[in-house]
Length: 412
Image (cartoon, rainbow, N blue to C red):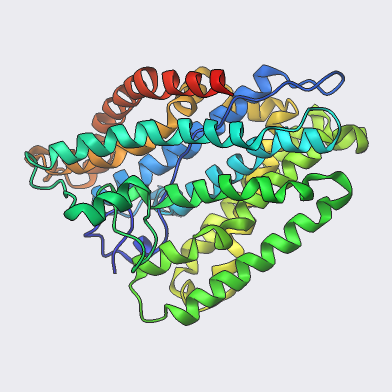
């Protein structure tokens, strides 16, 4: 059994999915009285930063030989391992954010508050957001493979073509990526391609259809995976089950949150007040906590077609959507947690952080001085790898991501 986040992981916790982090386009501005506050949108960037750090901690935990994390207070024990060991939670956070932010312009158009987004311009911006930093890393890792024995290379033109097209789906079509965390990139991009065909659901009168349709698609797809891929490896089942139909529950939670946010003037005022936003944020965090611990203690049933296989991502996505809605509506708690400068900065560079954290952790893992630290290995790994990863990610954002995103905006 192989973890998508690392080839040699044998922990049963690693039978669960890894992470993906993709960038989000700049928001449009609504006409009064529904104009968004830039501070509130910064909160959403900070939520991306939170998800990126969750991804990083998950893989740091893996490269530290997945230790148990238990805090003892008197006679009480608190198991904290689920908070770092379930990287799939980051997948859901990023997918919900993508569903929310990318649906906003289309929801505004359906509400008569914005002109219709041009599909070709929308797709061009998405390509310029995702591919340049990915291609830059692809080239760097390919060159490094000649000097670093631990760095896998690319064999043959067929594998090169699949890497260029991000075909990281199960065989025979796909290929195993040389950076293990790339496998979620085509899932995210599949949603980009599908969204223009789903905008009819972003009309207020049709919004009730979003979740039932998405949940049915998710259930049907994942159930098919349990039947057709019962004899496949854990890695192949993870990748297959999280392809777009199996992830529509998370994207759709973001779409529904965007629909409600754009049409909040049609809702009772108390539903989108800053006071309620604090309660929404608390409820969302608690629901996410329940989902994470539910998965942790039910992981033995995950691939047995039990409710956990279908239920944990919708629960986590609902909690995430509640936090996003709270942050967008000016909740103080969400602003304090995710709107601070550190989280906003981390969210700004989160795509490059996602791309680079795994190779950096892999290289540091091979350093002999880090091998014999015992229980101190995880904190030392974090203290060394996180600043290095953030520095490289900031450079990647400044020199690759931002210039190409600006070109995408100017051309569209």
